[in-house]
Amino acid sequence: MEGEYSPVINPEDFVEEIDNLYFPLVPGTTFFYEGESDEGDSLRTEVYVTDETRVVMGITTIVVRESEYEDDELGEETFDWYAQDRDGNVWYFGEDSNEYEDGEVVSTAGSWEAGVDRAQPGIIMPGDPQVGDAYYQEFYPGEAEDQAEVVSLNESVTVAYGSFEDCLMTGEWNPLEPGQEENKYYASGVGLLLEEKVEGGDERLELVEITTE
Image (cartoon, one colour):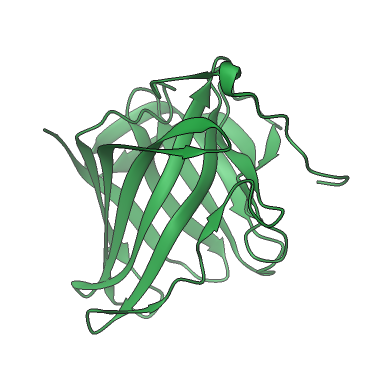
């Protein structure tokens, strides 16, 4: 994507709930994912939608805690900030990221906040995704520049959680990490089902369970 990236953010354009069919975030919901790293280590990710909020750029965002484990050892924990606008687009406003080694925080380098140090929010999921749509998911120049494109709207996907038709598929990449690309698959009414590297490795992570409080 070329040109200056400067989305117009107006607090009046945002709503309280996140009910995008491909990216629903209901407080109290936990998504469990399992997979294997390129080195053969077991991977587990738990995504918990908290009932907490954080105000970023005047927007009240929902806080989502994502915990990543490798061979059952916590490697990274992030608190992500999401909000949905009136058109159904789910925006990503930043994250508080902590990397762990032997139970201790060793780095917070992945953290960023929209509106601070030239960082801007990105769209994690369009409200009406169409094939060919391309967008920044996050924008912190030189640090976080993830981008995505809608590739398909009719994929068939089977994971441990179940089999689904008419799934949304995105291709995702980061120009700061050339040679790395992954595909993600989303089911309407469920959310993210599967992510797999298609360039730069063969790591795969799939949905195995969803629980609600």
